[in-house]
Structure formats: C-alpha cells, structure tokens
Image 1 (cartoon, rainbow, N blue to C red):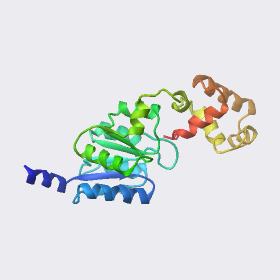
Image 2 (image 1 turned 60 degrees about the vertical axis):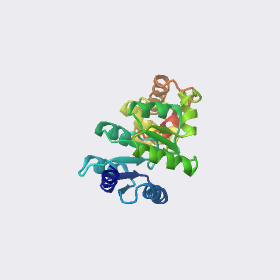
Image 3 (image 1 turned 180 degrees about the vertical axis):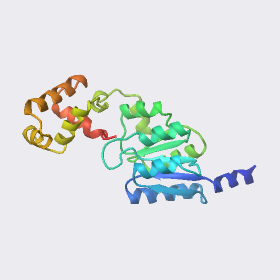
Image 4 (image 1 turned 90 degrees about the horizontal axis):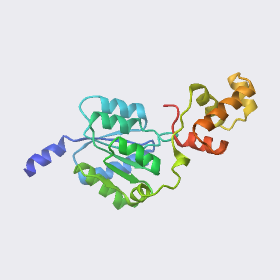
Length: 217
C-alpha cells in the first residue's frame, strides 16, 4: 500500500499560480518538502494556468492566488471546480464576500498569505490528503458580517464598466468625457446608475469595489 502511495505521488502534477516569482519558489519548496518528486508547474498569469488546467496530462492539484496583476479574479477556482481538481487559495485577499464566492466553487483549502508558514504547510498537507482546511484568518472571516457590502462584486453594464474603468485610473469626469468621446451628462448618468444598482453610498465606494475585483474578466 505504501509503495502504491509513493508511486501515485511520483506521478503527481501540481500547479502554482502566482504573479510573484519569489512566492512561486517559496510555495514550490514547501510542496517539495511534502512531495519531493511531484511535477510542479509555475504560472504567473491566468492564461498560462487555464492552458495547464485544460490540457493534458491532467493537473492533480492547484494552489493559486486570486489577485493576479489587479483585482480579485475567480476564473481559476471556477475552472478547477468544473474540472474537479482539488485546489487551495493562497492569497492576501480574504473577506466574507470572497469566502462565500469560493464556497460556491467548493474551495478545498484557503490560507491567507499573512498567516504563518505553519498554516501554509497545514493547508498543503490537507489539500494533498483531500481534506478541508481554512486558516484562522479565513475561519474568523467566515463568522463575521463586517464589510460584506464594502467588497461585493459590482454589476455593471458594458457602458458603465467603460466609464468606471477610466475613472479608476485617476481621471476626472471631464477627462473621461474627452477620452471616451461622451457627453459629461452621459458620464454622470452612467455613474449614478451604477451607484444605484449596486447600492453604493458614494462614488468612493463604487471605485473601491471596482478596484477590489478584476472587472475586465
């Protein structure tokens, strides 16, 4: 039985998605400490990870950040869920909205990057043992309602998204009007409608929630 277990580990393919090379290497070392002979694939962008997960041979496990380049992005967790690939989130992004979204995609393990190394190791061992694990920061967030509305994903029309995307870069309404070749009144209407639909208290909340998520996907 032990020999069979070791043979399975020899064939194991594990994906790491993170846009910081130092973190990739750090997580790779932690995996190697647990499974010395596993094949580890490193990806720094969603396109690379998507190809790896969708390709052949099959990926057995995935460890991924959900903030790649800019904003939270759940494409890879959703893809892992659809492909029935056990996965762990290792990210600085932790709040109740994300936890609820990831539970929809049956996240196996969730560890905050601000946690100690021991929690990362526990998360990896749990993942490879097909067990659930959530670090104390994530577990605490699961039992809190603080800031739920502050980071909920925005529902935007294509026109609203175009306007808010440019404004999130730091341009004012007059500048956005010139860039997008729209009347200033149209810009104001798109912003007002976006705030109303998403129940934003003010413009700052609208921009904050836009920046939190990767709204280009």
